[in-house]
Length: 103
Length: 498
Image (tube, rainbow over all chains, first blue to last red; front, side):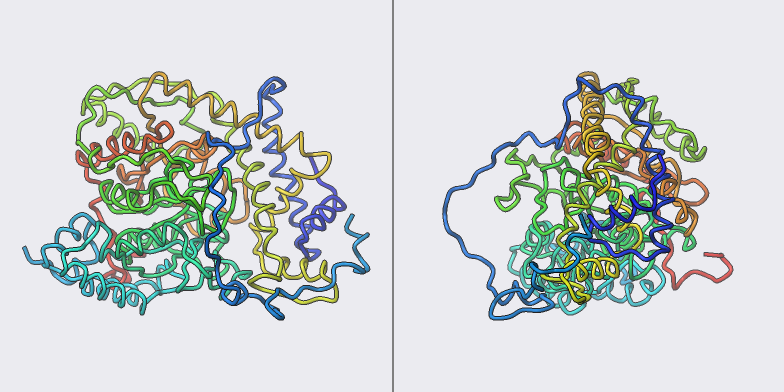
């Protein structure tokens, strides 16, 4: 199936991925081509087959509720582009003018 | 027997262990021999993104003290390369991506910590496709890796650096990660041994996540025994990785009895695809005949959903990657491209920080998970995954292991597949099913085609690492293809064309 330009741009917005016009054009072709190969799966009847999310046989892995040491705050923040008073510094989330464009 | 200095970079781990413990060589000599070889040849090969020179020298000195005290463990003094998706507190960890340029993790990956505690000597962080996404190492944001057997060809991927380092004498062993073949396929292309353990056998704490239901860490080495030793050092439960298994770890070296008599080994008709290189088919057939002559019973099995593994993988892995890579947002670490709003900062940071293949997979994965397509793609792939796993479960009722090619071709020329993503993906057609089913697989050299190594893959049931090691070791002892080494770059004549 062929992806439209709008779909490519919509998916890029969902993925928070800034793409140039060139990149969007290329991805439109490449993703469409990959999806054609993936369409091979339509040949298989899978209505009654249960899905496998992962192959580990473990479930509900618990540990004892014991407090242990954590990494020092300074070490965790050492790679942060911006930090202030022991916190990661982030732009204001509310009031962003373009949030509605993403939806 | 005296070991000449130039031989220090071609020893097996097993041989070096004996020589270190007998004080015939020192860990310091071994480290310097490798650092010299890196200085000489790595500008051409490109196996390392970061050489840990000072760390290695200090670790070697400490290993020598430990050996002198009689406290040596299997990895003490052994020069090791670490794929740059494994966190190291004393070296940058970039996943070969611009978005993590200069990132210094605050802690070691569990596998790194374990071999560090055993006294391993870290030569450096090895090159990879960006975020381990690729089959040729050409997606590294920093530089390509050249195949030590033919410098015009790819080393395979995504663990091209770890594979090339071991093949070229730039490390004695290495650690990589395998999500769809990223250990086995480059091991095959570079003529070394590579093992992907069972899902859950090895802790993934500190592995930069790509596809969490598929990723496993495993060893590269020059012999099957060496791979068994390194696997032994890293395998086992880790309370900090809840997907790691409490299943006891057996003694892998004890399994290397050199005998496959009476074992039932499967071959699958589906592992003969269009585009299979004739030289690869011939080498694989000869290897199967050899294993049969060693006394194993060869039985044909059916893995009817093999052809669906690749499209299933290219939904599942990108979907999981799109979620895992959401963490690279320019706030906590790595590249930050500031813009007026938070959303624009995300988009700019990720747009400039990620390379083309990573963007392609984030896009594909986000699409497959998006409203309206989730059932058609993501859930469909999960259902087909069930069928692929069932194929193997049925096969294990009949055979102890399955042998197959590691890849349908030998290493292809640099640039040959970069324009067509799906052609590139086909290099992993024989390795992906094991990740989908969570089972272990080992790649072992089995000959040459067009002057490049061919590799045999041995697959086994979950947690049957000992079985596949035993078969690969018995085969290796009978043929010793892996003893061949590519020539040092410095010794090559210009006229050889390499």
